[in-house]
Length: 288
Length: 266
Image 1 (cartoon, rainbow over the protein chains, first blue to last red):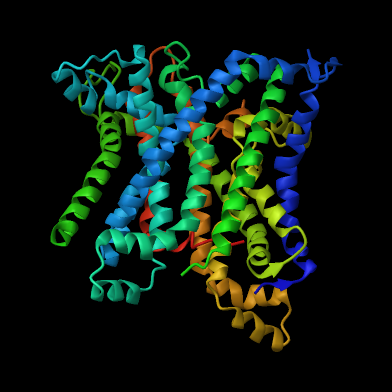
Image 2 (image 1 turned 90 degrees about the vertical axis):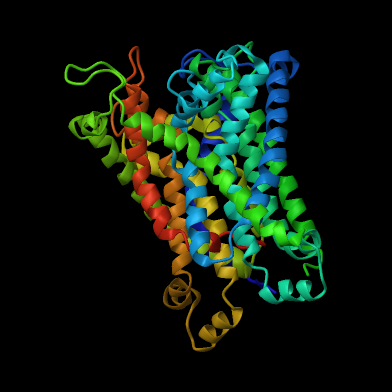
């Protein structure tokens, strides 16, 4: 059991101070801005909840909200099972695991603004490996005009970029399974599915929850990658929440963009809260 | 059925690695091609020109220096602050610990774009815009929570008896952390530093708004290469080069990667 001791606060104060400066102070600033009409930062007028009202009643906001939600769901449905599956496929020997993990993690090292450029280059019908193959089969290169094809590209790109993180997280959880468990399962003649369900999955739960949280939030607020692949198009079909916000900031609409930011933070906070509830629920379960 | 499982697994893993490598192969191939006509090389021919271009362009050179600088500063801020916090979250129960951890995680998952405007204003007041220090500080927003999370997983793996023996021997908590805990979690610190490096190196939103004139990192230097006539070969060469330090670290750390992220119970 953990010791009850409020002097523990002393140890977290430095972290709290730094996050207070780079996180809390900016957050309070935008909460303040969200109630004002701001022409320049010196001249501003109190508008109360007007921006919030406009947002809640705007079809555009809910459309982006819906798109972001759909995108996140797609990403989680593909990435989480794929990440778990690849983690389960990791070889036995330590040497090959190291090589495989290092190779799998490579996409995490690409600067985010270059990820769309890489995929655009790959899909280029004249110079891209994939584009050349596709045009041989007569598949249309003008995927940018099609909503489903653009979505397909963005989803595949995100799967390429982030599944590795899920793999690393899941694999590290799998290494905590004691070897005797597997031996016992082999003696009992357990099927691979039973081994996964009763031995591996319980160890994966907590890490999977964290992977779910990180992947949900990062895909829900996808910005850099989504915008440069097709500039929010076609027909605004890739205008996600953060892309919308980015456009608003670029247009210097301080008040509305602040209200939007606050609304996003409320969403974030409620998701984080659900996450801790789920974590507490997992902790209460007997883990073995 | 079980007999073929090994083959099936190897096939699955290999196809995934192939999928991961495909865009990277494309990138490397293009980086060796002259994509714009130059006086000495024809368009489309294989050349080292792009790589030479990196070293002769002062903007690109300084971008590499900036990137390395802010990542190192970020790690130097993050790790020393994260270690005591991770220790407290993992060992001590104190008033509001769960809520504080929730707040930290909330900051990790806050998209940078939400905070760009106020952070820019705040940092202008503090006078750290257009400097590597500004980016380093801004990046603690997501690196600090992740660092605390990884480290507390490592600390949780260390038997509690170690703490108690040290306290019985008359060591205080800070002394215990310094003398006994740090050597025990050294590989954890390395893994944490690697992840801080990785998340910070590739970030672009803060890097963009905080460097309008000076202190541009690699990602922004690459951005600046896009224009009316983009030399995509050079762009790819810069990207390949930008991945080399990370890839080297990744390879060095490959056997420790999976040791982070142990089940984190707070």
